[in-house]
Length: 272
Image 1 (cartoon, rainbow, N blue to C red):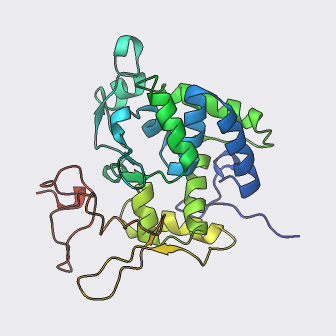
Image 2: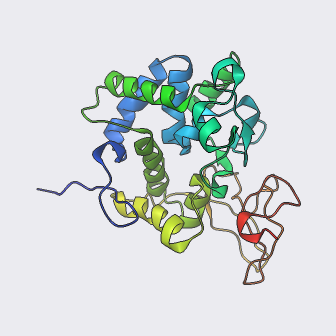
């Protein structure tokens, strides 16, 4: 009998069953249930497993964060944003208590550009924000996720962490490199945390697809960039002219490639 694989935490201990990634059969059932849902339930059900956004980020998503004019639509997660998910457009309870009334990602690395190559997710974003300008509180979104578990007839519990981990396994199966996965998921650069978090997904999946698209941009030191991307004509975050990166130089004398919001801004590691 083959032992069932489990995703672990930073200490190598198995995560709770409800936090384990969906397998491919479960993901197909989840996707079908989400596509059959309406409004915020449909959008919330598709975003986390196909973008890796945390539940808090999904709850506070705004139309202005979504960029459709690029070859691959993107969600640009800011370093902070006003919260109006509470009563009368006040801040929600969590933002009032834990974030001084302003929403912020759980870490500075959570502010990033997230590509959205899935057409169904893009359509869900367009349809929802054509009618509304905000989603629901984090607690309300968790209720929708529980409903989708029943709709998909999954014989297990699924929380928001499981959907984010599912996105990690999707990237791992597609053969994305550790640094690209770390950037996409907003993990820390710290070797013992961020990069280990990504390696878990690579170790978890049964196989990684050999066929993949490479950036193909010319590198300053010669040759072409081999970082994986979503489509043949896409560029990686290093060589994409639309992406603003930290203006500092790292310890190797190379430009820092961490994504920031403004041209003159520095990342959390290079703040003066």
